[in-house]
Length: 182
Image 1 (spheres, rainbow, N blue to C red):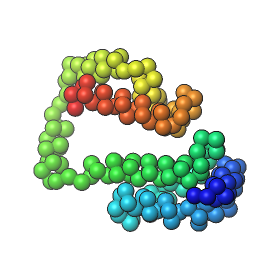
Image 2 (tube, one colour):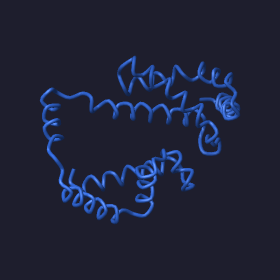
Image 3 (cartoon, helix red, strand yellow):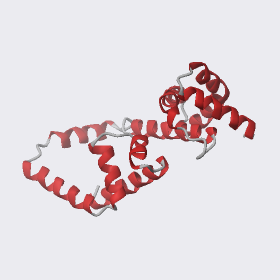
């Protein structure tokens, strides 16, 4: 991308942050083909890619205020949002693709009653695993899963880059999964 286009897109991002719908429309016209192509390569379904592109621009509209031109060019920031939306969409839908046998097995397991002792043991195991996380990972997980904050909100709360927070959460989840034995 030329620096002129980056400068124009940065200006549009500033206008969008101020609530300018026409700036959003202009940004959409200029970058949506590239974003759509990237999303389509990830999800490989046109209908999903269209939905994700729509969600991406909703997120851009809602989070434009947080864009920092000092950290990255607008296209990089926009690509990041679109890519993450596509990956999140795939993760959300991957559990829907399973066989009838898998569904029946899951239903049978879910019908088994959990005792209070089972729940207590699981809670103790989770607490033990959480205690062995580095403090920044533990804090990120707590904010995400106990307070329901998004990764963007956690990054703002902890005054850290969003990518750092995402890495902390990812590493923490990997550790917890291994520690608990899933």
